Amino acid sequence: MSLIPAWAPNLHPLLVHFPVTLLIGAVTVDLTSLLMPARPTLRDTATLFYCAGAFMAMAAYFSGLSAAQALAVASAESAAVTAHFTWADRTTWFFVFFASLRIVFSFIWRSPARWVAVTAFVVALGGVGMLVVTADRGGRLVFRHGLGVATVPSSGGQLWTMPDHVPSAPEIAAPRQGT
Image (tube, rainbow, N blue to C red; front, side, top):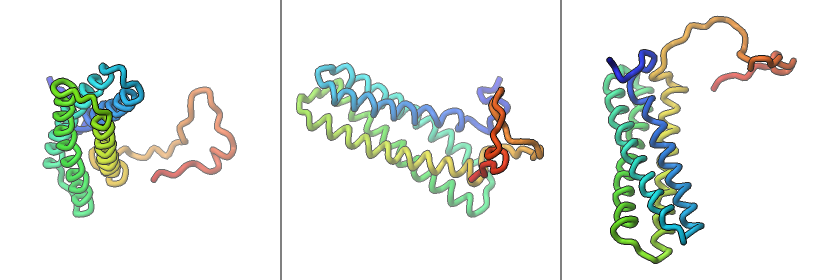
């Protein structure tokens, strides 16, 4: 029995959304802890989110590395895969290191100085910036280069609409074009 469903090309697309969600959630909880400093459990919760996000980033990183090594790509796609890999490498290890520091700040050295918490938050925002660039590069691989997706034959059908929704004349006359 395989852990990978038949429709998935590999494990990577099933894992990549977890670190994004967990790390953005960590920054959100971290901001809340800055706004409510009297509640140290929020800081500790953010730390646990950073740890879970770093762990899932490693899982996504290694599954992506495995998936990339199984790809036969042209030079344009190779450059795009390399760019995504480079950013994923930096982002993953940044958050692993950052989560390790957060464990120290939350559970070993609980500094009462507010500047420590503010500095950690600003550093985490930089990491989220790295995460956004990594996700953008990965999205380009899928949506611009078509890596990791099966070719779907054109049916020559109509644009999809919501059930019980009749498209208006402008929607029919000028359908949206893909990027």
